[in-house]
Image 1: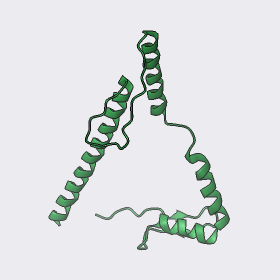
Image 2: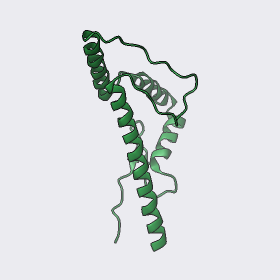
Image 3: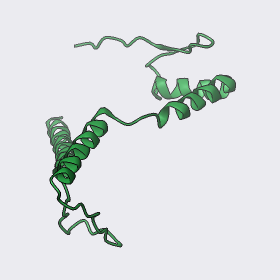
Length: 136
């Protein structure tokens, strides 16, 4: 079964084409070409990325912050004193974390879930690659 040829990448500045037939990936060759032959545009691209890099926080961060603020406000309205958690001088990953609010627990659970899912996908990919290598 023959695979369909991929469309070559084109430099938007000078129109030079980079096909998929060479050893190196065309995206890498294109970026190297832009850095070498079009330094002004390359510098503009870097500066644009720097400007947009740190803008704002994600939607999830905003929602979690809002949830945390709501819980904090309800605790304060109920007359429960709020005490800032004491941070240990050096965090030990094997000691259990004591959260001061429900949102902190939810954030930790979400992060652990993300890490577990990433590990699961990684092991799944390794198993698939090993099976594919054995079948050849």
